[in-house]
Every structure is written in structure tokens, then in C-alpha cells.
Length: 376
Image 1 (cartoon, rainbow, N blue to C red):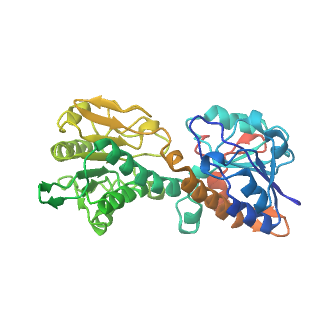
Image 2: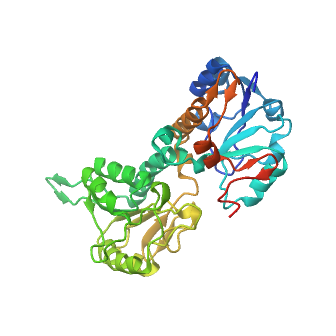
């Protein structure tokens, strides 16, 4: 990859405000010996001016000129193959691909001879933590979910004792204690809410307590850990689902705000809250469904709409990280730099991926789909 050229295009997906490179990461890539091109206006929605990229050393060009002769294209959401005309043969595209939901796009990449690197398939191992885009984006998504729910709720979070009387603390329940859930707990606690949380993985109980929240767990069904491959949650057994439904139903009726965050990679989001359970909550309560774009944890939730059910407001964004574009872009761009720079080979003039991480993220190569999870 002598004279390696990296390109970044403006995101085309509806509502996508993030960008895959920042002036900080542009400088770092150039310091490694790469040249860099950015499409005009690519960073505007993330509060990055074209001039900032130019000062960092990037060429700011039209889309067609930016990708012309590119060896690597960086994206938040993978661009359409039609947007990549002019890239070098076998060029890499590092982005999120939604491989299970967008199989046609993956096939198109293979047919075009491109090497698709799906950042959401980054293995959750110690040395790849700094490359994990799902964690970096989920962290800020959990934060934003609490702020959005608080704004919709319209009441104060902390207990307030005043001369006119006392205001009770908001009761907030987090369902799913991954990265997003932990940040939701921490944010709600900082705002003064009385927080409780649950998860199918029993190992999260200590994490919940460490953040000052109350763990709510099924104790009657033993031996069900809910721990899947790579640290992700796995699907619950019917016994556990029934026991959890009973527990949640009694707890949820007492809550003012519920944040749901449960996702299972490659599958539709599990249903955590039914319409009947929503009906037990008091009018004016709020449920924020962070998984709404993947089918939703909450019955009746609709992406980017506030739906009122039984007097309860159910909401969720199709792309929560895009609501904090400057910060999520900064973290995402660093994830990409950490990924490619970790494998940078000076003699090759660019990154040379190893098997453990390379095989985990590579979807296509040499004109075919090569990932085992897509060929199963």
C-alpha cells in the first residue's frame, strides 16, 4: 500500500450526522505516512468545518475526487457501492454495515471487489477495546436517552426540600446493563434520580451496585446467566422470561421513567415491556426504548416518534448517537484510527490485519463474502 490514500465521504443515510474522521485523526493518519481526502461538508453536522480538515492536512474535495484512487474509505454507515467509483482495486471500506440486515449491500461489496470491514463485528477482547465502536457509541447513547426522557418527563429528578414542601425523587428503572445501561444509570444518578436496574447477566449485579443503584434480579430461577459469546447478552430461556416478566411487572408499575437497552447481535431486539405493563404505569411516565431501531424492547414503540399509550409516553430514536454528533464522531473516529494504526506496517506503507481481528471484521474479500457468520 505504498502512498496509501484514505478518504472520508459525507454520510448519506437519513438522519446520520456523524463523520468518520476528525482533524485530530486526520493529523495522526498523515503522521503515519498516509494522504487524506475529505468530501466537502462531511463534518458540518458534527461541528467540523472544511477549513479545520484542511488545516489538519487533508484535501477537501468533491465526493468523486475524494474517493478517486483511495485505498481505504472510512465511514460511519457503509456507503453505497455506487458512491465508491474510482477507488483502487480491492480497496478497504471500514464502517458499520448492519451485515445481517443489509445482506444485499454486503453482496454488492463482494461483487465490486471491495474489502468490507464491519466495525460492529469488532471482537470484545482486551486489545480491541479502543477499537470498539459499539461501546463508544452506546456509552453516549445511554447518556442521551436519560436526558431525552428527562426532558419529556417534565419533572425534577432529585428530591427537593423547600419551604413550600418536598418534591420526591424521580424513580428510574434501567433494563439491560451493558455499556448504554451503565451510562444511563450513572447519568440518572448524577441528576438525582432514585435508580434501579436489571439484566439477564447476573455478573452485572455488582456493577449496578457500584454505581449506587438498586439491582432488581430474578432469584427464583437458578443457573441462568444470560452471558453470550464475546460478553454480549444471550437470549433468555422461557423459564427465565416468565420469572422476569412477573418481577418486572410489579416493579415497573412504581417507576416514573424506564430506559430499555437490550440487544442481541444479529437478532431482533427482545421484547421487555408489553402494552399491559405500560398500562400499570402512572400517566405522564416515560419509557425510552434505545433498541427501537432493531425492532424495539417496548410494545408499540416507534422510532423518532413519541407515542402515548395509556397516558405513558413511549419514545426512542432511530439513531441515538447522531443526536450527539460532535462527541460521538470524535470517539468513532478514534476507534477507526486505533484499529488501523494498531496494524500499521511501515514497510507495507499501511495496515496489515492479523487473523484474530481481521477475520472477525472482514465481510468480503477477493470478490466473495468470506465471513463465517454470513455464510452459515
